[in-house]
Image (cartoon, rainbow, N blue to C red):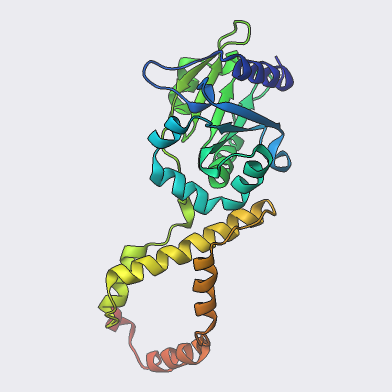
Length: 264
């Protein structure tokens, strides 16, 4: 079948609760207690589908990983607020799932890892839906190594089966700062103001940077907290003019009379 047919079947499967989970492994998009909202060609056509699940049940929300919720809200405040206002729900009840579909007419090539990476950088997770042709021992052996939950078409009506689950939600990814090492470097250079204090400040800077990146990707509101605005205000009061050129020239002059053997 082509991609449009596969997409229609997968949406029908979601709405009918016909996604078969692995033994003792479930994905929340197939949880019948969750409401789902589906956006075709979501986020300016970046993804085949973007699925939002809404957990209306307060008990489910209480049992959910609070650290995961708070990180998600901090990193993607603007994205969550937009749907929360339209659905009149709390932002901690929303989870986004970007979906990439590969029909029998598609090939699995070098673009797939890039598509999964794009999903992770945007939403922290990725779901890959495969047509029958792609479900074989050789392909699944490699696909299960990818940081994505893989779902395959069973070939029967609108039933799909979860083939592998990637549980980890990647909230920060490549934007992480080496905070602990940075604090140790300051300490090694005579700046003794407490590793924990430096670590917290670097965490704030890291979070602000991530919010800016995520908001720029899709022209959404970064959703800064009051404390983050105050943090940025303090940064503007620091004299950040540094004469790199003068220092580099000094290093050049000092190294003129050095022999190359001195560096071995």
